[in-house]
Image (cartoon, rainbow, N blue to C red):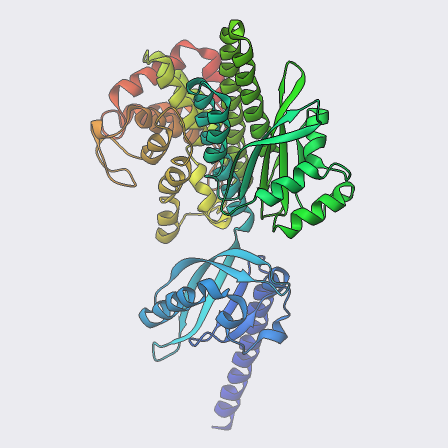
Length: 529
């Protein structure tokens, strides 16, 4: 009996040692995991806070344990909704995702995508809520920058059209102010004509949320101090002040500007026959609003206006000026191309395993479209859609994209959201082709088994049917995190096997001709496994 008791005692000691070891391993894992991690009680009080979260927020774990998560970290404007979402998750015992702003110790906001997972006690009640976060602040900033530049591109097109429609400069100038005032960050716009003999500026158009006549007079009469508006006229170059304390040479002017509530200024001159004609001034109450791309676009707009002014003076050069305006529109298209490249770079930085995948799909899809004798514009639509078809993956956590093993059902459902996310991003860009629609449907299948909406046959855009085949070819013949490359031969057999089932018959036939007739094309995509 004594021996049995000793055995039981020894067994208990062994269990305690194993539990202590397991506890130590869990604590080490929590400390070393690179993603922000916080453990909350069902009432929102903080139980545990890992070093990754300390780094983002600036708080030490020991200073926040026991405090209310929502009161300490969630901004007032979204606190009520965030708390309500959390309480519903606890009440209904749900695992879910939520995007939320949090405040760091220095008062700055970070945007975090949280995965909320309840942990239950023996009674089946929620004992702890584990929140693992992904910092998507920079991603959202990039998206906002793209949105802002696209809006300015659309405004620029309207102004280009205005230069063709309006026959007098005063109506043009006011129209320019009215159009650009539609950009939320632009709080005050003003255009003036330069009188060289008097060395002064005459106001001709303005747009503001309130009366700013006194401020315009200050700008015109401030000749004895360093004045960025007169400097832009004198040099023929755009002058930018992106922060009210940024440029010391304009200290006195900036002080007056700051007194009006403005932090940023862009002054763009109109130059006609190499002589100053006027100036466009844009003021904002936000700092660092004028990025390099935005300055370039506004420079194009001021250049277009200068061209229009020249046509008024010299009717004989009207045809030349219109040609230059068309060239300006082409430069806008080049800038759109730059935005496309910026989007691609964001996706490829997020998912290095698919680096070059979008470009490969674009090449294959373009070749198929040409083989099908589609129109030039249709081919270009397919090419651009191919370049951007996976942009929605910026919403997918990196841990899922790079996972070497099989995805769970929940992870696969997150992946399947990327066509819709891509559509929401791309529909804001004013493409001359249905790029967003093609991207939305590129995982649709002929028999209706695809996603996200299960459409079939001719309900699917032709461009999307082409993209589906091109995407399959490159995905199967490329290395993936969860498997080596399967080879081009196997990829071609796959589309033949499911021709008329998953893939469009005409598209598959065209694809086979592309790879059969162009051996160089075949060699490029026939990667070793």
